[in-house]
Image (cartoon, rainbow, N blue to C red; front, side, top):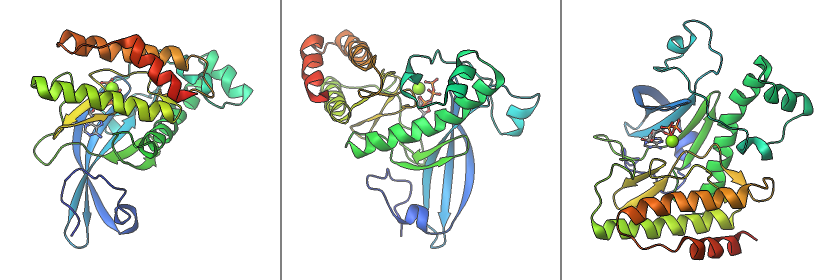
Length: 255
Ligand SMILES: Nc1ncnc2c1ncn2[C@@H]1O[C@H](COP(=O)(O)OP(=O)(O)OP(=O)(O)O)[C@@H](O)[C@H]1O
Ligand SMILES: [Mg+2]
C-alpha cells in the first residue's frame, strides 16, 4: 500500500511508474498568476495520494478561455524583469519579452512552469525543505501536497506558532537558506507567505522567480532582500536576529 495522503519525504518511484487515475479536487488557492489545484491520484491497489498542481494562467486569454481551462480568477502580472536576467532566451525572444509583444507574453507563459520545475528540482536536490517535485505539465508543476485530507498546511504568516515553534521555524529557515545558497540558488521572493508550516516542519514554496549566483548579478542583493524580509517578520515576533551576520555567513557558502 502507498501511504495515503501523508507528506512524501522521499521521491517515490511508484508515483510516476505505476498507472493511476487522477481526479481534480478543485482549487486550493488562487494566487496572482497561478492557481493551485488539489489532485488525487488513485492507484490500482486502492491507495491514493494527494498532490498540488500549480498552474499558470494564460497571460493573454481569449474570452472564456480562463473558465474553459478551469481557472477561477484573472491574472495580475508580477514585475518580473529582474528574475529573467539569467534565463537563456534567443535574441528574438528576448526582444519580444522586452517589447511586451504577444509572442513575448507566450515566451514568459511557457517559461514560468519550466523555471519553477527547474528551481524546485534544484532546491529539492540541495536538501532544502520544499515540496517534492513530481512533474511538469504544460501550464504548471505537480508537486507534493503539504497538508492532509482534512486541510492544507497554513502559510507561516497564518500559522499560530508558540515561542518554541517560532524559534524552530527561524532555525529551519536559516538551515534551508544555507542549503539553497550553497547550491547557488536564491529564492528571490521569500516571505512568511511563501513558507508553509506543517507538523513542526517549515516548507518553502513558490520558486519560479528564483535566481542563480552564476547567471544573475542581482543574486547577492536578492539574497539580502530575502533575508532582511523574513528576519523583520521574525523580529516583530521577538526573535533576535543579526541580519548582516547571517548574510555574511550565507555569502561565504555561495562562493
Ligand atoms: N505544495 C503545496 N502544498 C500545499 N499548499 C500549497 C502548495 N503550493 C502552494 N500552496 C498554497 O497555494 C498558495 C499559492 O501558491 P504559490 O505561492 O506557489 O503561488 P503564487 O501564485 O505565487 O501565489 P501568491 O500570488 O499568493 O504568492 C500558497 O500560499 C499555499 O497556500
Ligand atoms: Mg506565493
